[in-house]
Length: 205
Image (cartoon, rainbow, N blue to C red; front, side, top):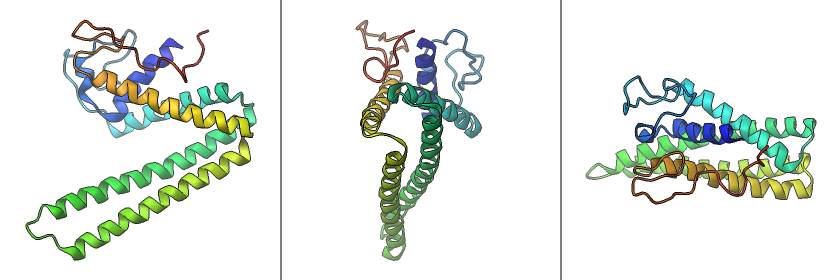
């Protein structure tokens, strides 16, 4: 399970495109090329879209694996859950990308000395529409979960999702911290808890 945690740290960094890798020592057995590092120490290049997608799929596979264990799912339920979450996540990513584009357009329009309201209005309407669709997507997810999981499993799912998200954010924040290492050290010499520790971590085997 330790290798899974290390991969999750690397995956989080790859998916966010952070330059924190330039501050990290190479991971044993990892390919610098795969993670956006070239042959020169301290040099970092952004991962390609294809690479980010490849890593995202691996992270999703790990999430389903851990969900299957946490919720004690059988093979059929696990496959159904993976299909549901895959579909929901795809739609959610599309909406998030649309939101980012809309926000970019909004900022550009507001940089003008006299912003044109006729241009601002459709952008705001796009954001409002996406907000509604995000809420509808959440309802679709909850309805789908009810068709697959028992009440107890849904409760465990809610807890797992919260802890998994917190774990991923902790990994990213820890790696981005100045001088921090993936193994929990810091340049100040103070101990820093390793990412992914605590709830949501699968039992050691």
